Length: 257
Image 1 (tube, rainbow, N blue to C red):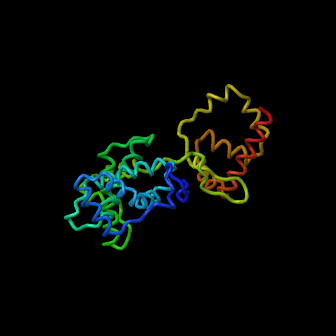
Image 2 (cartoon, one colour):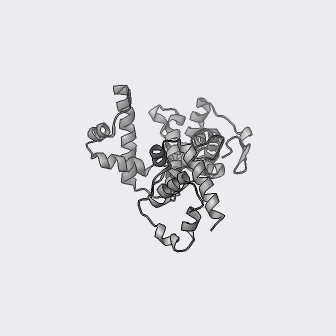
Image 3 (tube, one colour):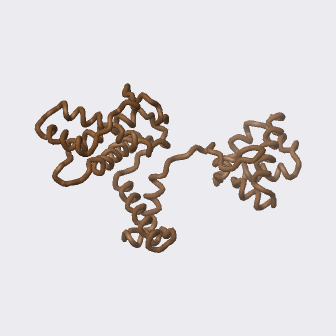
C-alpha cells in the first residue's frame, strides 16, 4: 500500500489545502445555511485528515485508493452530523467517524465473516485487557478478562480467535542459512491417511533407500502425524535439523518413485 504516492483517486495530495480552525468555523456557518460551495471547500480542506487516518490501515493489504474513498465517505458523514455548538474540534469528532467507516468496509469485504456480536465481545475483551494491564501492571489472564465481563472463559477465547487475521500455512516462522520452517511444519495430523497413497506409489520401496534416522523421521512425520518440534524432541536434535533431514529424505524418495 503506497501511502506516500502523490496522486490518490485523481487527487494531487501534495496540493491539498489546510484549513485553520477559524476558517472551518466560518465555513460551517455557511454550510448550515445550505451553501454547497462552502461544503465542498470544507471537504477539500480536510482530505489530509483522511490521509492521516488511512495510514493506520497500511498493513491490511487494501488498495490505498479504495481506503481513501471510504475515508472520504466517513468525512462527509462527519460534516453532515457535526454540531459547532458543542465546542469540540472537528478533527476530534471526524477521526472516529472515518475510522469506523473504514473498519466497516474492511469487515464487510473480509472473506471470513465474523458476526457483529462476536466481534463486539472481542473488542470489549481487548478494552478490558488494556484496563487490567494498566491497573495490575501485567498482562491479565483470559480468566480475569472473562470474570470482569461476566462471561465464560471459552466465549472470550472464541471471540478473540475470531478476529485474528488468517495466515498462510506457508508463512515462514524460522529461517537460518538452510531451509525455512513453515507453519504447516508445526501442524500435526491425527488422521493417518497414509493408506490412501501407499497403494498408489511404491513408498515402501523408496523407504528402503533411506538410512535409519531418515526412516524414523519420515515415519513419525507422515505416518504418526507428529510435528517437526515433536520429532526433534524425541530424536534429540534441533527442529532445523529435522527440517533439513526430512527434505533430503523426501528428495531421495522421489528419485525412486
